[in-house]
Structure formats: C-alpha cells, structure tokens
Amino acid sequence: MRKMVERFCAICGKRGTILIDNLCADCYRKQHPLIDVPPLVKITLCRSCYSYYDRGKWMSPQAQETIYDVIMRAIKARVSARIKEKGRVIGKELQVDFKYPKEGTELPVILKVTGSIHEEIPPYVEEYRLTAVVHFELCPSCRIVVGGKEKAIVQVRAKGRSLSKKEKRVIEEIVREELARLYERDKGAVVLEKKEDDGRIDFYLASVHAARQLAHSIQQHFSGKILETQKVLGISRTGRTITRSTIRVLIPPFKEGDIIILKNVPHKILRIQKASVKVLSLQNFEEKSVSLARLFKEDIKIIDEKDVGLIMSVKPPSVLVLSLSKYETLDLYFEKIPFWMKENESVMLVKWEGKVYIAPLTTRRS
Image 1: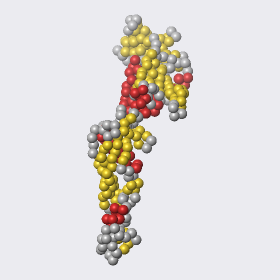
Image 2: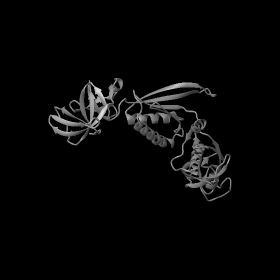
Image 3: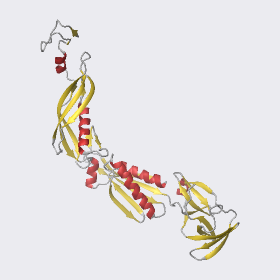
Image 4: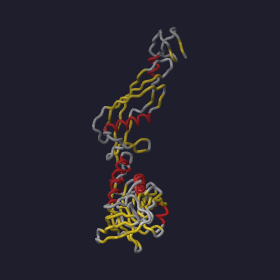
C-alpha cells in the first residue's frame, strides 16, 4: 500500500518519501531481509580424498582442485541449500576468510546478496555474516580402501587357454587408464589387490561401479563376454545387506594372427571385431566374417605348430617355399595365388592333416 508525503515512517519518522506499509524504504528493508539463512553452517570433508558431503551424497573434487577450492565449493553448496529467499534475488557472492582447516575450524563467511524486497525499491546489496565449521571424516569409498575390504572382483579369463604376455600387458594398461579416469568421481576406483595365477588375473576393487566400468572397457577391447554374480556376505549393523560382486570377463579362445580350423579348413584370424571375426581361408585365400557368438559356443581347434618359410619362386600354379626350420624345399600347388605371395617374401607354414598351407606372416588389416 503506497502513501504520499503527508504520512511519515512509523519507525524513524522520516517524511517526504514513499512509504510501504507505513515504513520508509530503509526501515522496510531492515524489517524484511532478502533472505533467511542460518548463522552457522557445517561442512563435512573426507580427510583422505577431500570429497565433501552435500544433501545425502559425497561429491568428489574436480581435477586440479586444491582443498581451498573444495571448501569454497562445499560452503557454496551448503549455504545455497539453507537459503530461503524472501524477495527478488538477482545475485549472490560468497567470501571466505581462509586458513588451513582442521577438525572444528571455524571459517568466517560473508554472503553478499543483491536484490529487492519490494517492487517500489530499486535493487540493493545486503551483507550476511556466517560461520562455517569444518568437520572431517572418511567417505564410504575411502573407508573401504583404508579397511582393505573389496566390494567387487573383476576376473579376466581367456576361454580354453591362458592369457598371453601381450594380453596381460594390455589389460594392465586398461586398468591404469580407466581407474585414473574414474578416480575423479569415484574414490573407490583403486585396486586393493591383484592376483595372477595360471594365465588368469583377478582385480579386487573398493567400488562396484568402478569394477563394472573396468570390466566393460576390457570386454570392449578384447570383444569378450561379461558375466556378473553377487554373493551375500552378511548384514550390516544398520540392517543393510552386504554383498560382493564378481564380474568375469571372458575373452575369445583365439587371438589375432592365430590359425583356427573351420569346417576342417585352416583359417587365419585377421581381426576380432565387436560381434564378428574376420578370417582368411588358407584353402582359397578368401576373407569372410564369422559370428563371434558362434565361435564362443563352438570348440575351436587352434593350430600351435607353425613354421616360417621363404618363398623362392612363384610360377603359377606352383610356389616353391623353403622351410627355415627344416631347410627343406616344398613345391606347393595353388589354384589361386594372392598378391602377398611373392618371391623373397617370408610366410607362415601351417600343416593340417598331412597338407601344408601358406598364410601371410603378418596380420593384414583391410
């Protein structure tokens, strides 16, 4: 309700100004703050990773953030959650008097709010003085890491064989890169223990989410299969069921460059893709794609006995090859001679059911 100059402010007696509910603008502002905010806010930080607790969730620090950056973000989040706006708020600015925080440290906070409590009053700035109290504890992920209790196991296996040294090296690289990427958001993305035995690797992790992401990355790289199971370990003091997940990644029984038998004919694995395998027939030298799911189901024969040969001459349909291990010359007949079968070229010699086949020595990508 607007009154003109004949009236005066009911609090300070000021005349000659617009009144709002019998109060001048200054007194109206004093009686009606822009916001309600508690004078004391408590922030909880993880003493290990500096994550902060906000509205039921632990928020991880961002890359390159210092503890001061995290505290500022935590205070902003906590203050924002406790503010109740009474008027039109245009902007908020937070200032913190920093000192190195310890348990119970009180940090002076100045909150500057720009806005207006009434449409007749132009925007102005109000200043609120608060205190932020810092409390430290361990977040759930760090508690598990410190306690050494795994929540998930990632098992990496190759079907019907041991993992090769190269595969193990690649798996270790994937683990390092993937967990480093996940750690910014998930502090349980650490390997608590690694077990390696008989060509198999097990990774024990503190986070189920990180374990699933890691298993997916390994599965994608090797075109493998994933199986997840859970085991109930007990009941917590709060009545919550405690479980441990085991995630098995099964990679194919063969690798790129292997010689396998399909329909009694040797084939060389050229490329393993997401859902298929590209192979080269050593009978007619034609390339084709075979379902990866089908090869997983079948009992695939892999030929381990291979030799290296040197092509001495190519005179279609005859190819003369020198076996470098036995130093004997083989005169082989082919209806079709591929472009890679050239004189002085090294090739792979494969023997199957009394017959010698030739394969390119290196895996070609098309």
